[in-house]
Length: 419
Ligand SMILES: NC(=O)c1ccc[n+]([C@@H]2O[C@H](COP(=O)([O-])OP(=O)(O)OC[C@H]3O[C@@H](n4cnc5c(N)ncnc54)[C@H](O)[C@@H]3O)[C@@H](O)[C@H]2O)c1
Image (cartoon, helix red, strand yellow):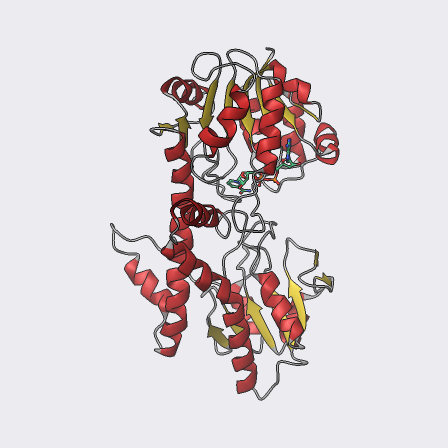
């Protein structure tokens, strides 16, 4: 076994992991189904926002190579699986990529190997889905090979916390697996936290994301009635945040987006319903509230235009920031999309600006970013601030627009209305 690590799935999760392992001089290779991804990486091109082309070149310089050949697995001491787990049509996790990746690993499993699943999934997957496939060839876990789950917790775009300084939770399907997996991550992560088992590690990830989902829903619901009560919720949160214990600030917005928050809690509510027959009420309520936010913003747009005696049909509405969070290029599950679709379907003339998105297709129409932001701000009947990217100057936006709906609570001025 000549490689320390083979990462299976070289996307947002797998590639940064491979990078971190390269940094401490581990011998690393990556396996991906996509020839486009593999060829791009071997040519020094990054397809992931958090890594630049220079980062990939440095990895190649450290000996990294990407391949579509599954035989590479047989060379590995450790295999980490980072393949997608999208939602299936019935609302549960679609484990087909995990099953196919595990089958590939099983075909090349060697004595002494450590296999780790990092894909987000429902609790029990590592034991119930991954373990039987790996043991089918006759090797036994804890004796011949090791198996653990470790959630990926990195916050895209966060320049303070990355893989190295975010504590890594690890849970093996047995004690020996936990120990071996913790020792592996200890080579390039400052702090490793061992869970009681793989189920606890799987559930820890879902608790973290469900917690965010629910607390965002809480402030989104409060934003709606605080406005009617004429209470500034952002000021309320500012005051509450001064409590040095027992409170964590969450902020309202136009809905939740990204690959984790809108999706992961579904895995849990799906499993509770499927296995136990009852709903996970907090998650279902949070989903209902967060999913309704784009429609709430559209309703507010309509009300503000109405105050100016303008119908939504034919109104020039400029959306600012269409990615799912500030200062990253990722548009997956962005609430800006359903919002734009609803505005377009009601006849609004929608334009947008986002420093990270030159071309955007929220519905059938392909939109091109406005070329002159100042002119677009001045010309719009209503500007809707969805994402406060760092390159936006709040005072400038407020000054140059006639009327603004600020969904982030960052602007002040005569024409500014908060969510
Ligand atoms: N993106 C995030 O911020 C994030 C954060 C935490 C957890 N996760 C979880 O990590 C997992 C991976 O997510 P991602 O965002 O990196 O996905 P991604 O789509 O960016 O990348 C996945 C890669 O896996 C490859 N792939 C698919 N099936 C494969 C197979 N059988 N063998 C080899 N390669 C295969 C794809 O070609 C793709 O390049 C998911 O379970 C996700 O929920 C993602």
